[in-house]
Length: 228
Ligand code: ADP
Ligand code: ADP
Image (cartoon, rainbow, N blue to C red; front, side, top):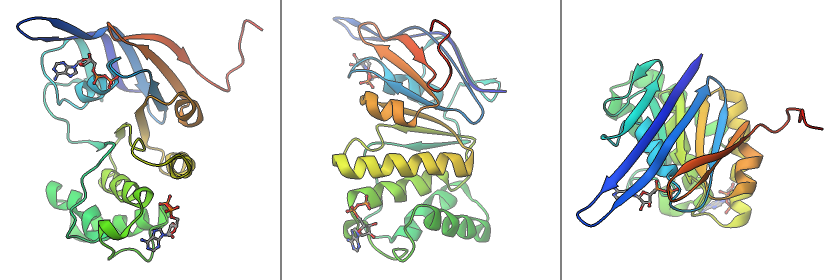
């Protein structure tokens, strides 16, 4: 039951003077319930790969399938969280989370029930009405995470979601993210330049290298190494 199928994917960005091969012949399959982390230095094509899967970047060569169908336009049945996910400054925590429901025309009572569950799950209880500037960075990222999960997407794509946080908060968010993944069963693909973060979170770790962007290694921790 593959959720994401990427085969022989190449993405070139052309300008008048030059061509950048952001992704060169990349293949990757993500199955339901996996937590795939993609690690690698800046410029290795991590963000480009996520955006292609989300249908946000046209013009690639190769195969990109989501839920068994080719990705040809922005996908609705995904959740997306970025390094700095924009919260509406004038809206409280709960209303920021419910923004997702408004954009998608979700049933209001279902959305409210689900928002309250996510608020509890991420330890935001008591902060429902707090405004973003009244929250710590970690709490703001948890609000963004709740919003990305509100419509119960089958896959959650995260691009350096904790990159703007200090080291300690980042570690706390990793522990929390791991718990949320276990409790919700969501399929997650998370991009990070931090190898320790990738190793801590991933049920599978994909390592990329730049110029051109390629997958150089795939690691599955916890599986016995046959060479030993
Ligand atoms: P990463 O997320 O690993 O830092 P990116 O996917 O952002 O890498 O970028 C991969 C390469 O593609 C980089 O060389 C980057 O400059 C280039 N690139 C990304 N997006 C564009 C774009 N819209 N136009 C031109 N070049 C781009
Ligand atoms: P986080 O918990 O988001 O990783 P902190 O270490 O700053 O980041 O916050 C620890 C705890 O302190 C939070 O879970 C929350 O209970 C409380 N807290 C943080 N910021 C505020 C705030 N602005 N107002 C009230 N309580 C806060």
